[in-house]
Amino acid sequence: MRRKLLTPRFIGLGVIVFLILAALPVLAVSQLEERDTFCISCHTTPEVTYYNRAQMGLAGEEPYLDLSSAHYALVAQNPDEEPFHCIDCHRGDDGLIHRATALALGARDGLIYLTGQADPAIEKIELEVPGLLTGACVKCHVESLLEAGFNNHFHNKLPETRQALMEGAELTIPSDFPENAPREVKTSETTVLCVDCHRAHIHTEGSELQAYLDVVNIVYPACEQCHEEEGHGPLELAP
Image (cartoon, rainbow, N blue to C red; front, side, top):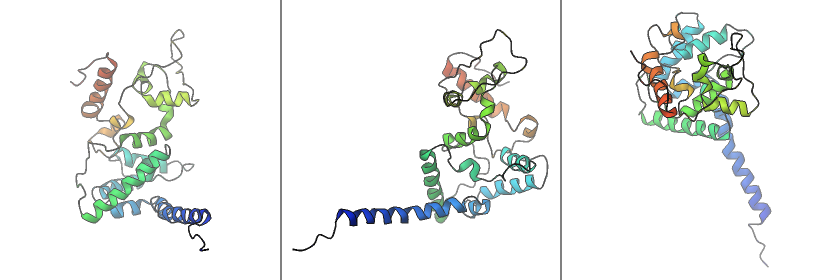
């Protein structure tokens, strides 16, 4: 009697070999993408501009030209911090879906590079996957969401604040907080995200004086969007 070739054991071994072969490129890319020079080898325009700004920041050339280069410079000034890299914002650390999304974007961008279809615009306004970037913001700056009080209400309202509290984070109560004020925050279902106000690669003259925020053109529209979604708050903030 002829022996069956496709036994369950043989199929299982084939699946394991396939998964290993599929994982090897992912592991290799995951190591290489920790190097900024690898990132800009494919992301030639406008990422080379961002890279050059970062190098200027590392060299101490102030004012730092954008929020990204300020991160490079300020982290480098703290000897206890690991060096900052492009991938720290673009890796997709907030779960498996974010990581898979980041890898898929990397593969797509590789094809864009090979076909010579890269967008040369330096100051990009539209963000393709803002949730991916917001996950990176929260990973390092969750404390900015958790200080209670009206002066921080724009952070308190974000869904990421609610998520942090659900995961066990605690509010920070400022020293001048009114004694009778409630020790809690009311989050909302707004679609506004961190990156709707904090744009990493936008160079705006003088923005270093206001935490790299373009208040009139970027922040005020985000505020108005949140107010509209909430159903209260001023809708005409721009002068």
